[in-house]
Image 1 (cartoon, rainbow, N blue to C red):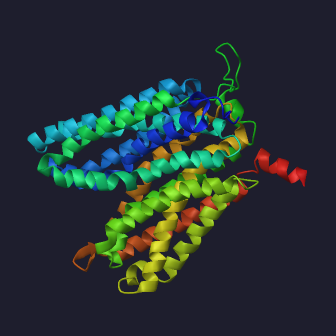
Image 2 (cartoon, helix red, strand yellow):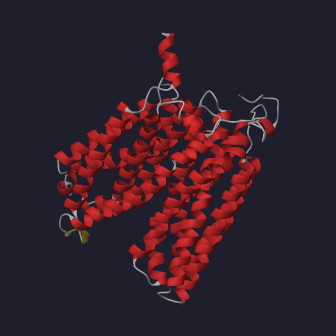
Image 3 (tube, rainbow, N blue to C red):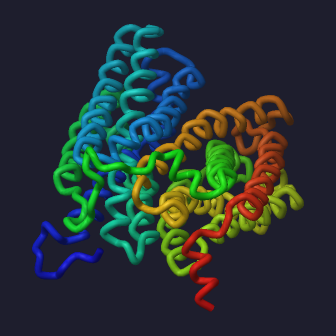
Length: 443
């Protein structure tokens, strides 16, 4: 499915797939910059940070649900789906800015808070889901011999967006004064619309790829999933869900854990490094999987690495005793960085793992349904960790910062148990793919 070198830009896989994928994913990936401005939004509109935080949870929930319900639209027409993504993401961001402006003028306005939920959560969420899905199948078609590398490149753009956009947003917030928070949203809405619309115009499937015509019979999603034991798909869905839940649980407490081990002055730097590991895991793990007979091996590796580092951190009480201890600080940071890498790698390997098992025919729709795991994990991961931290342990002061070391350690007990469950699912329920079986027979 490689393009010809003499076919011009219209048959160039980088211009028709890789670049538009990066334009789309580097735009929508800025949803993970939420922590940069969430406190500013809460203060500006006169609500608690906890009340405002639900906007982010809703955004991730509707990302997954829109991907699940609109997967068929992506399957049939990537131009329509990428246009929907461009309009919804930019409109949601612009409306968020307007409701922040309204909330600043009417402190404590429920209309402003609900407007932010709808704009950032629902409207942007639809843009996130369709934008995330739109380039994935196209990438796998153009880069048929290196599907993992291709999808990893795009999904890495989603992960790297935070590292790229965070300093820009921080400069905008500090440079525009008190009203910078809503102005930033309005300006970035325009910037991201231009980027995504350009990606929409460039994105195209290879000319030799045949999608079934309207009257042509095509196996349904359920029929496709039944080509393997249904437990196989349930295993993939559950291990994907658990990996996201555990990742979000630890990532959501990352800044406080870093402060707990006495590195408050380096929080910004460590957050950037974490984002690099997140993006690197998306690209590295997926490219590595291209060389493996069974992509499920990557998930086993991710879970084993996470379990080992979590157990070491728990056994050494790294979070409790890390302040002033270089070795324990290194252990805790290794856990944070590798959880970020595994979290990203879990995302980038899902579409290629599904295509190895179920083929390319309905991959966008199946991938979309699988992303519903992201929707539910977006609600459960952060909230689970917050509940544990608020109900276990005691708050204490470390270098002038209130932290709960026992609470953070308790989060690790739960995530470690979940990682073990995910590993067992990967071993027991997820069968070897057709590619793996063919490789085994060829020996």
